[in-house]
Length: 210
Image 1 (cartoon, helix red, strand yellow):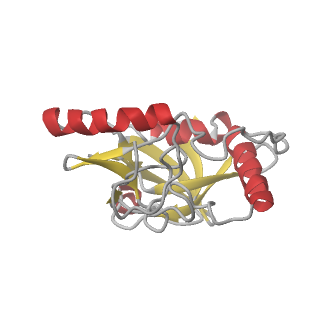
Image 2 (cartoon, rainbow, N blue to C red; image 1 turned 60 degrees about the vertical axis):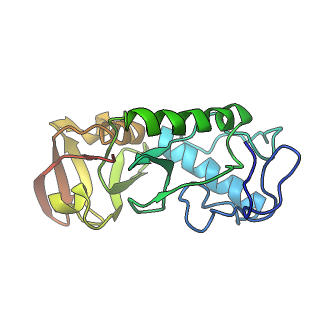
């Protein structure tokens, strides 16, 4: 898949050079402008937090400076296919995504054609709450952001709330990736939160993205 007219110069593999043409709008590559050493440390820390590791894992550079990712998460809205903008429901349609492997790029035109013909098939949901894991065991889940007009905002969840339990399951029995996976399903959840000295219960139902 090659960049269309107006998308900037491309390499022989069909990937844009220089800053990504969609980087300011797309929410997928927020670390692109960060120098490589700092980027590595940030990514190592994120992996440790997400997996509950005691220390950041070792780092091995990919042999591919671009086109290295074998999995990307796309949204479909109104027959359009793209990424969600950072902290937003807005959809960003892109031409050539430099981080996606060529095999994924080859599938994108077929996916877009399928959606144009048959509609929007996926059933992914969105909560609008961003959590971060803290503590020695990374099982203290604190709210670091709540998107306006999202299901989390409607439920009354606020920044700095701490998740104590979900559907009666104590937070110390969960992992951050488990909670993120749960909140991508359009199910109703009873969430127990700690806000200051108060323990509250809210009902959160992630909404379908599409």
